[in-house]
Image 1 (cartoon, one colour):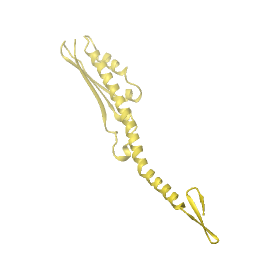
Image 2 (cartoon, helix red, strand yellow; image 1 turned 135 degrees about the horizontal axis):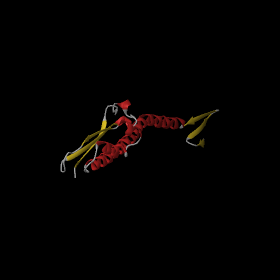
Image 3 (cartoon, helix red, strand yellow; image 1 turned 90 degrees about the vertical axis):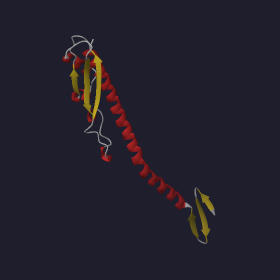
Image 4 (tube, rainbow, N blue to C red; image 1 turned 60 degrees about the horizontal axis):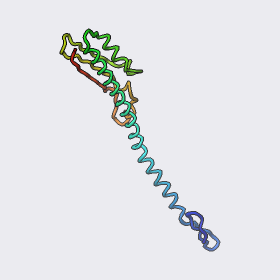
Length: 150
């Protein structure tokens, strides 16, 4: 009887019989099955995390842009062009190209001035979870800020 790694070689007459080699193959098979079952879940979680972080970053950008636009709109003598320019200063790339800006200027002091910035989610993040039914192609990110006119 000789030992080599996990296998035991037993000499029976003129034949050498290997014992224990099936266990190693079985363990490799189990690991492969576990990988096949767990890998899609891990990838889905990773894709969701990437997509969510990109959407959260865009949401924050829209909030800052809407606040800056509302701050400009609250100043006396502000025009819609000045407000839109203040909003667009914060927007970049596809977000700037596809963002929709709605401005409600106040006429008198003390009245509210509102700026709303709306952008499609597909402009800021790839649709990575579409294959499992969580698509973002028809959803929007909206930021709205209201301030009183000075």
